[in-house]
Length: 201
Image (cartoon, rainbow, N blue to C red; front, side, top):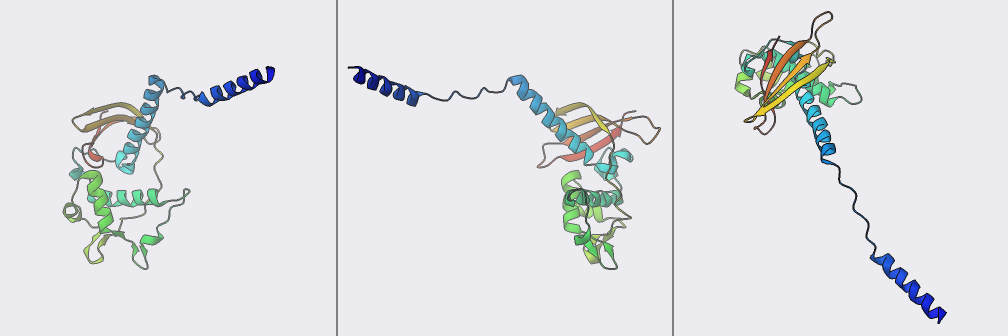
């Protein structure tokens, strides 16, 4: 009798064990989700600002056509270096031609400028001393320089009708006060497209 009872209890335990289900992991609280999204958005906005690189420190422009074409050639060169570099080492060998210096292929440069600023290849080639039609490319004017390490603080973000406005402070040169700037970026295009950069103080 005792053996049958023990066997019954053993089978019951096994059945109960098999019926157990793992409890689902607790979902993150809405506050945690909002905080994570805010951090991701902030990082994305700062990256949009930093991508302008040395153009942040230049003259204001209310339309990308006001940017010097030579500056756009130099901007692409620096972007290429920043994205191609590995472990902080920048290499330009793939674009270097003997006795001619650095040549930036026109297809790649023009596509990057059009994607980021909405400027056509025809516009970029006009009166641009860095453009070499016989070589199908652009020769940058001077060295690329070092990557910018300027401190940027994001102050506010507004987005309406596909237009993103980022207000931020930019660290000035030694002894110079902080600059407050507003950058507008179109977000209703396949990729973000810079529209204007204005100094507010």
